[in-house]
Length: 335
Image 1 (cartoon, one colour):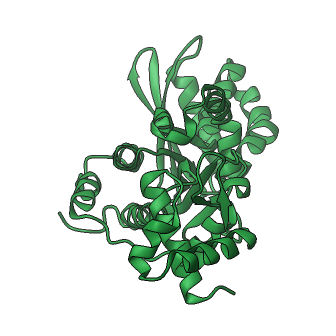
Image 2: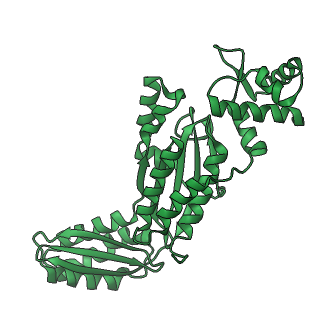
Image 3: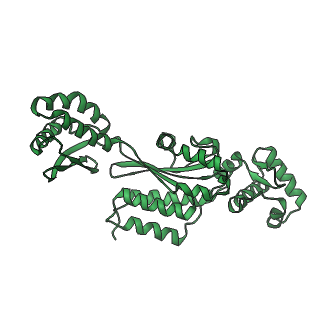
């Protein structure tokens, strides 16, 4: 257990290092705490011995260790009030009723990436507890249609398909058969039902049944799969921690879909805001990942912000809390 003075010193070092990206010496702390440099050096040595601070090779000052950041986040971090400018920019995006949720998300993540110089990621998907309510096929012209899927939670997805070697009448007949069989089925189970129940039925009644089956399989597969959007990847280049070309190449290679899906996986232990510092995250030990999950109108997903371990934790947490609230209430408020 740290004393109040030790906590104050650790907090000052964390905040100063986040701000300046330079090791912090005892001189700067003495002025703020009004105590001798010998006392501060002694306390810094204790914090280093406790694994909360580290020495660098290039300076006599100290920097926070992963454990030091974790102690700060868990015990010392205070809520940071959001600036009026940041709030207004994000509110404008979410008050625009003409934007779909996915568009609002992308626009807001670009804003946050620009505000913070960190990388932002959104992982979106149709909620597992959505149940298919209806399928519709709407002709656009003689050679293409839009297939519309509607769930019990009001989530609507549509996909344009070409009518290659198949007539509109056959598509309509197939839609009727498919509705009879899979309406009321959870989204996660549709692919299996298509293959083992729908395919044998439409093969009896529809001439080009393979073409029809493949078309609907594509549509449902697209509907059920998770979508990943990475915004501001190059922002990491602006951080002094990543001025090593080999280090940044390694990190960029890790920002692929497979790693992001692992990183964004929802757990029963998740809190409103989840903070993974260094080795705590599955992406890279040189970064911190701060993530929140959202749920809105049958869609659920997660938003992550990736930056150096020297991240503005309080500001990012405030931004994510605000973003989560705006997403989950989008459309509930009057203009």
